[in-house]
Length: 325
Ligand code: SAM
Ligand code: SF4
Image (cartoon, rainbow, N blue to C red; front, top):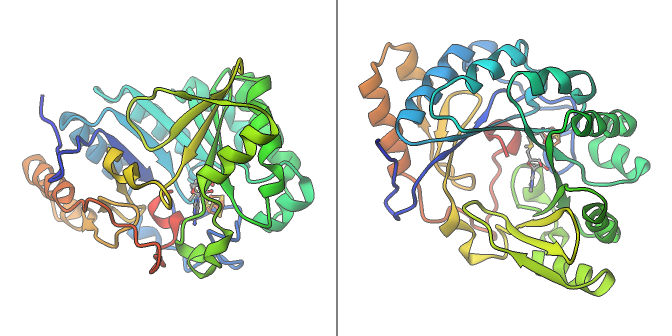
């Protein structure tokens, strides 16, 4: 078995793929109101091209794939693509990050095609605030999407970007969801990326502050010993669900645990979310590169992975929607 190890000794086994840069919401920290200049159709990786990259990555030891975007569910023929990914040998874990806008209708088929786990983005439990942050009147639709995922027995993680002055008053409400059901609520520190690069840094709420508020408002948190991955996991005593904290802004060890690479919608291999470094795979693919050449390209992409690309002071203008958050 081949493995992908970067120059800092981190074993790469997780590929996160943005299947489209388009989205049916306009979250204020992520996308401008009028969207962006969408990538032209021919610059977007075809499914066949993505599948070839996944197959080869699986031979190099990648066993975990997450499909994201933009909004992955808006891409045409997505279900057929999912079922083809789920049949790739070596991919043990296939998951999806979605805003749930289309989940009510698609959840049964997604489940049938191999998606057992979804991360759903939901930054507020209040209808009016949802309309504000997403600039879209679709709160009920998203809640129905979450329910549909539950009905399918999918394992659900709720991604909450914590924003001071917007949803800090809902931290306890989100945390209490874990008392009722086996959901993982993940608080994500707002990163100075894309539209949020122009936000006041004070809007980022550090994870320790969130934990402190939960301990004061609900009760002690027990640390859950977790495997790989960026989230620090906790549980309120006796709760069926868990609390996850994604703390790229405050936690120094965040990058040392990183085991992933990303593929942008236009076929750029991005070894680090925060770094502008990327290696074009689409050009060589379309020029007829053979598997050995492609494997070498993936290896050189991994070799470009910096220990940490995040520079909180400088931020990063790249839109999360193009590289897949
Ligand atoms: N559209 C899908 C969704 O929203 O779940 C998938 C793509 S979205 C870019 C993936 C995740 O990135 C979402 O949970 C979103 O909240 C998060 N995100 C986007 N911009 C962010 C930022 N500046 N800081 C922290 N998280 C961000
Ligand atoms: Fe779309 Fe997701 Fe970005 Fe919101 S966070 S605008 S749902 S890509």
